[in-house]
Amino acid sequence: MTRMADLHLSQDPDADALLSRDPLALLLGMLLDQQIPMEKAFRGPAVLLERLGHLDAARIADADPESFTQVMATPPAVHRFPGSMARRVQDLCRVLAEQHGGRAEAVWEGVDDGAEVLRRLQALPGFGRQKAQIFLALLGKQRGVTPSGWREAAGAYGEEGALRSVADVVSPQTLLEVRAYKSSVKQAAKAKAAGAAGAAG
Image (cartoon, rainbow, N blue to C red):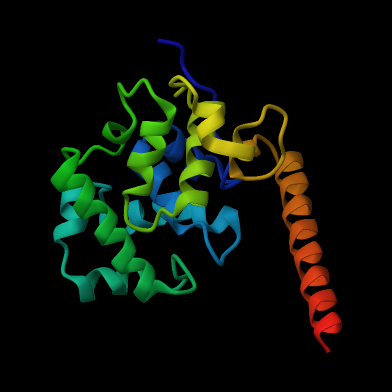
């Protein structure tokens, strides 16, 4: 089996090494990737590993919710919303423990249809369609998970040469390019909203 290149999502060598070897860490990083910088989100699993001493889905699911929230909230907090994200992390780990043998990779491993992988990802707590498509694109582009039709299932995020999401970040330079793309999309949306408000007025 060909070894995949190391990921560069957190821009921290140790955290990226963890993401590269541990599918649960990668899935948790994707879960955390909202309303905080991408690099911080993908450093989160390494912080959890350091504080918990493990990244075991069943043990995280069974942890006392108050204690786990404290783990998430201890400065520097894993996420800017440690309480709600602690619940999401535990909910996700619970589904993995109950439905996938505690193995994140069981969500996509051995599945030969990209649309089915997308469906499975969308069934996970905290994964809407967009997040599921981005993660599917990340698996296909950087982890060698390429079931039939995966690019189509991932939508625009699956396009070769795209610089739209975390799926396309392979270096500090591509991180800047993806960030610039996201910023342009936000600015365009604001301008459209302002235009609509002006027309209504």
